[in-house]
Amino acid sequence: MAYDYLTKIRINRPLTEGEVGRRIDVHKPVADEAADAYTVFGMNDVYLEVCDSSYPQVGWGLLGFLLCFPAFAFLTIEFFQSAVVDTPAMVRNGEQETFSAVMWIFVAITVLCCVLTVVVLLRDCFNYRHKAVRFNRQTRMVYAFRHNGPGGVIAVPWDKAFFYPHRLPSNGLAGGAPTLMRCFVLDDAGKKIVNTFSFGARTVNGADESTPIGKQVLYQVQANFEFIRRYMEHGPGALPKVERYLPRGPSLRASISVWFYGIGAVGSANGAMRVLTILLSGPMFLLSILHYIAQLTSREPVWPTDVEAACGNSASTAMVQA
Image 1 (cartoon, rainbow, N blue to C red):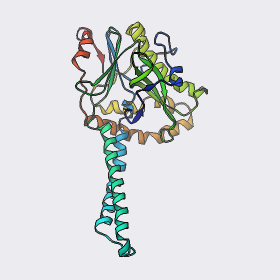
Image 2 (cartoon, rainbow, N blue to C red; image 1 turned 180 degrees about the vertical axis):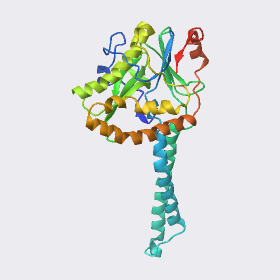
Image 3 (cartoon, one colour; image 1 turned 90 degrees about the horizontal axis):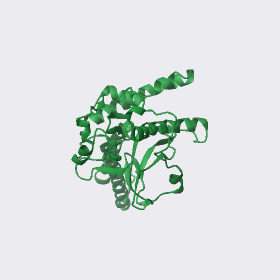
Image 4 (cartoon, helix red, strand yellow; image 1 turned 180 degrees about the horizontal axis):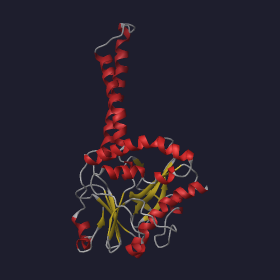
């Protein structure tokens, strides 16, 4: 198993027919438009650097910790007190041992829940400010950052990488099925998945992809990949101008922009959508603050020297970035 932020992905397995059927041919256009979708950290003639698809999600783990950890900690204390100190009058002497054992089971469960909330917290805080993916058009390699130090980067040739739009299971809390671009790293035979990472735009598709609305939402992910594909196949000159680049360090303004990206167009659609936009603005602003806090607590990602050497032309070619 591999974890992509909070999503568990099965690896070390054969490709499914569904995945094979959705594979993208990097030598053919996947969309009529190319959109950066506010996912680009920087770009020059040598490489394009974009965020991984979990970048706009940062803040959910911190929110989950703030909401759940105090509750589970309180329950742990209560169950512990019941198991060790308190013996309710309704519990007869012969039943005290059973009652105490049940309370200890509850203590163990709530402690595990506390640990789980801390694990979720560490997906956001005290981690890395971002986990970028570099597309090097000079070497035709793709590098996905995972952590500092040895073995911290997934590297795969552009022409051998397995790219496909990954539609995750529908989630009622998320409002639909999260959809993003995923890369599978395959074995030498090209049949078995040995590693994976996601990158770029992430959307939530509440409709079936066969419907007009479902196709439109999927198209946002495809258009973002088309931006990357055109860069790799034709260079930065073939791309539309990037209006805004993501900053490499913490920025409250950028965190707000990430969460509110595209909401203006939605809010101007009609009256009902405008009301919905207003209602969502409060929670989205809160998540923007949590996104910023998570970045403040986290480390700067450092690319290994071999990757920097492969992208070394950036020293002589100006890197366009925020």
